[in-house]
Length: 222
Image 1 (cartoon, rainbow, N blue to C red):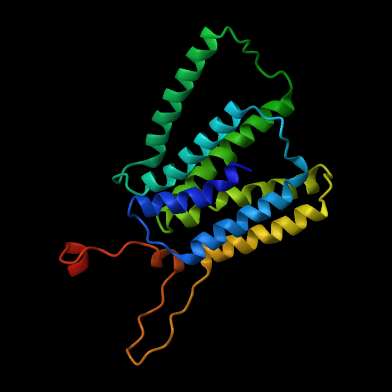
Image 2: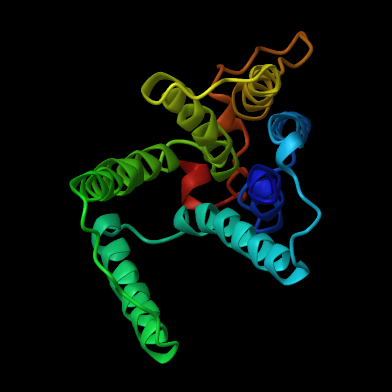
């Protein structure tokens, strides 16, 4: 549930950084999608979660939201090389902490486990990261953040096909609400009232969320 706050947090952070301007449909879409997630997972929410765990998950969600905003500001560089350095550094740190904590580090022994790991590396990491960067270069950070809400829907749908997992009515209802929220927040284009002035050419709603260039800047003169 806390991770479902990602679109709302990204929307607020992008505005705070001056990267996007406030759009009513962005706020409404994030709230509607959050309500859909609440419907899907209402029967799984437990109050017996330690407060420290909730705080850590919330901080992680803030980091996820901030990542999309920061990536759009990073100078042009190879995103795969940059991410590889970050992942190697993170893996080294976690391995060192594992040694300090004297954790056991057994390797998987079943082929199915190795196949699952290979799938996560290839499709869950490399392909997904490539699609994420590709989309983030063309859309706003707040629009791309809705992917965090769509991934569980895809996962449960595939589980129903591959393993026969039952899809509940609450999942269907919540899924439709989530999709409605994604459409409102990322794709809905509110047309301005017609006036006698010549209308501006239409553009993607995510482009409309970008802050205008300051007057006198090279981009504005171009």
